[in-house]
Length: 295
Length: 280
Image (cartoon, rainbow over all chains, first blue to last red; front, side, top):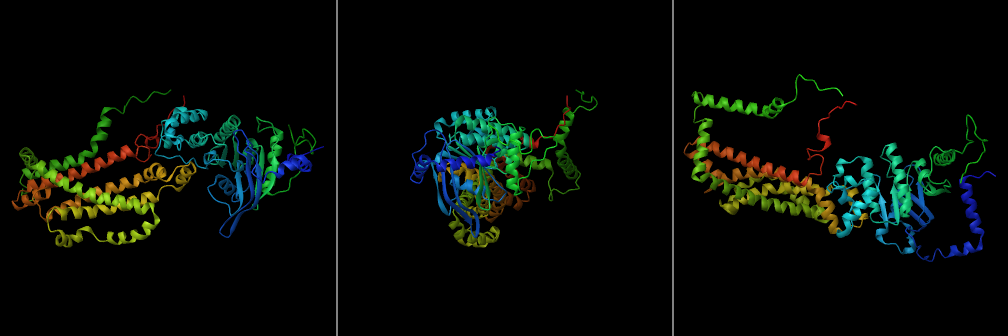
């Protein structure tokens, strides 16, 4: 039996829906569920819509994000994925619907956002930037620790203007992590970096996520990045979630692996809106309709 | 690794030449002036010789008069700066921060700005007479506008992305102001300060012609009465020197407070001359 990643996720959902015990447990979602212990935050998004004036951006988005999971939002530019992220961050309010973080128990400091540009304060040294918002007493210690985690401990005393783009994003990452967030939102943070730095940052983000266990939501236009990092890929199209697929590749993921490439190709075709074709191979290593998922 | 060419080492002479070359023209001009005066071609009534200026300077310094006049003039200038600049800074912060304040006050201030300060002299004399208040008022009015405009612009031009970021990191209103908005506005405010320092001296010179009992202007006017052109020149040079000093102080402030800015920091890599390196 040949199953794609998408189909597998759908099968799993159908099975769950049919199981009476699981269905009963789900009923409790609308009444605030007890907060999940552990570092990650659970996100419940119900019927969220957002328009900028006459222009609708998001329509009736309903979604649940499990605590500790890594979710990627992909889509063409202007599709509303960044807007959804900003709604999750609380930077903007939804027109309709509700976003519940951890059943309403989340604190303001549990959510941190990483922007597309590093947005470091140029008049503060790197260490002071990382310590932004921390209480005075332990600020420097914790900042130093966070910088060490991103590998920039020796640049603590420098001005941001002296760092490269990749280094600045790393400082921004340290700044987000120093608050021990339970939800880390990443708004295309690697878009402005060169390809090699991007790959290094992928490894860094993945290792920090594995270490700290926060829930991560990554907005990206790069499907490869989404497949490399996330457990689940959501496509935002026509103001809705057009598909929702679990990424069943084992970590650590290698980009060259056939399963990776196949899944990435599938998602990319879906994003571009072209119908999924038979993969054409010059020298087929296995039959054309071959296995397209891997454990 | 290739050795550097032995013929022309960039050594002491080059560096001395580099530092000394800008001074060549002024030194030549000075020498020319001295020669012209000595030879009688340039009458002392028109322009005294440099040596006479120097000796007048020295005698004034010895008698203590010079110091007294400099102190009085500087005091007036700084008082005007404090009043006008301080008011400009406060109003600029106010209208920059609160939109309603801008709507209320900004257009009125722009209207007043278009009145040249020096054109107000007859009014100033009528209101304040010719004593110290008049001089203070003139300097303050002139100094006010550059500081106000640049402060207002500085506050408004702070990167909104940084403000958004700081807000999302939980910075309260006051912390946001202190850590993001004020430092962001500082380069503009310092530009306003440098501008106003230049204006301050110009206005002081005019204000001191109104009538004075002390000050560099008094010294110069008095010397003119007695045809002491060398003292007049001393006065002019004093004004120039004090203006330069004020600018140097303002630059010093910039170097200190704006070290983080790549445009103001000479040690920044962007300012270093590119040294092509051989690949070893």
